[in-house]
Image (tube, rainbow, N blue to C red; front, side):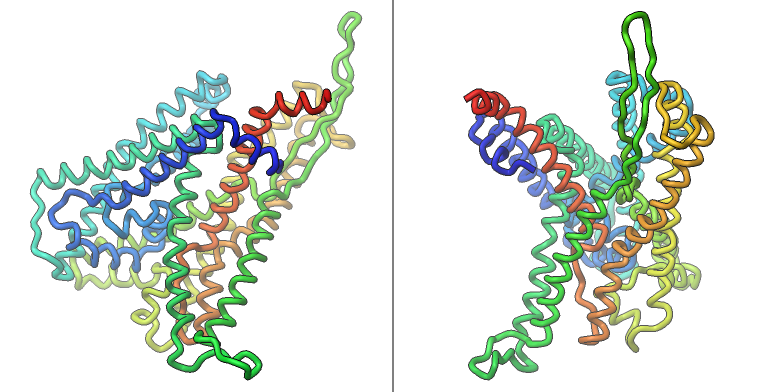
Length: 476
């Protein structure tokens, strides 16, 4: 990265304007997170929301990427989840339907049509998700006896419309950021959402650190610091571990296998073509965080179904069993679900989660990296891998390379997803209870990935802005 060039580019008015526009949009987004859904007294749903977050890992993840919009029952409650889901569906359909695949390869025009269809699909998905969340929250308030509000049809229409509009506004704000040419807007909003949850973690750690009920930290017998000694050393170790994790996340995100592609030399008239070398980079984790999102959604579905069943009929044992077995162990539910400490059930959710992340990594990589298609394109362009025959042999070779990368990448991604469970386990062993971390391994992976992408985009824009100055310095 050319950090000197980036700082120098901020002297350019156009560059400065783009940066301030992005900052203004992010501030507007954070203001939206505090506008409540117009459905009676929003405070009556706070306990139901807390209960939903405790019982569903997917809801906790949605709360994370919506910047606390779910916990505060704001109009951006559903966040960007409908748009992300719509993008995934369109992407899968593009690979499954030949006509859509041809359209996606039709340059800018095809991409615009696909993006338009993604926006159109976002609206019904946002409506369905809004209705589902309001129904679950309302049933939870009735079951728990929180408030006496009875929503009318008008209340339902108004609240669903507001939540759908909030999701569409977020999608629009993301596209406005993308237009500025400094990173992907949707990713930047999710990045801001996760970062906005940092104060929760700092407050949790700070409160435990300043609790000197069991004594304070003595430094070589000279003087005492007003901090909890156990929590101090745990926090210091956690900070060091966080730096190490971030370092390895950057390495994993940037790691790739480079395959050299040779192009045969062709002569047409008096002109020769080809005879050059190129590279085919294959990322270690080509699927990104998508497998983790898929695994979270898939694993949380039984818990959500169980919660709906329990909300309608609290005496139904099926709903209670589903909710109990498929609820992610966390700091918020540890005392109620595990009053006697860690049991075998505590390890069930993390184990299934780890296996699903690995499975979805292989599945999604096979969709986005089609070895047969790549081998066919290389053969048409006269390209080949040295020592490998073009065509089917090349496809098998690429498949073998991708599978080997996937083995290590999937295990690494699974361990990243396991970070909150590993951290909770360490705290349970050391102090008897977990300390909830607002940024999980998934959130940290998103933060690192988006930060690197945005830095690359900012660096490219800075080089464009300062190109004339650089040329003048070179001539001098």
